[in-house]
Length: 168
Figure 1 (cartoon, rainbow, N blue to C red):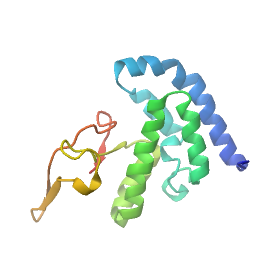
Figure 2: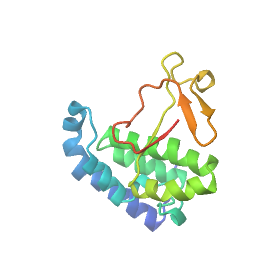
Figure 3: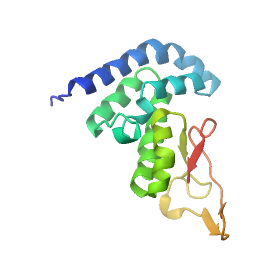
Figure 4: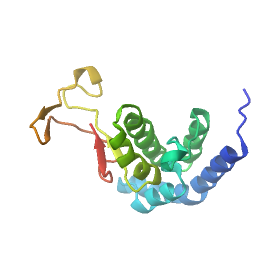
């Protein structure tokens, strides 16, 4: 199967491959041994637009289609698997959920800063007694009138150490 990209998509994917080779790969082992993904690399990914890859251009994203996005993730993954996981959690789980289910105010508030990488979003699904089975979630919220209270336990929240926003 031959995949045809337009010039813009090709430039983005080629740039991501070079970024993965020259910036991510040389630091991947050290980052893995430290158990942390450096904030300077998060910032660089945001500056290059990768953290907004699937976010529509009207919100500051690259607006890539699913095929181009998949190729971008594959290119980044060749340099550092953790960097590609950041993309998938930040975009496919968190940003897409806000775009599809969020209010207009939530979209306006969060999506542009997610696209730029100014805000990093983690996705909290996994619970101690039910793993990642969404049907078994026990975490619940209470409406207290002027605020909401979230009660429950989560674990293994990827990138929770660098996230500014948590989608639970």
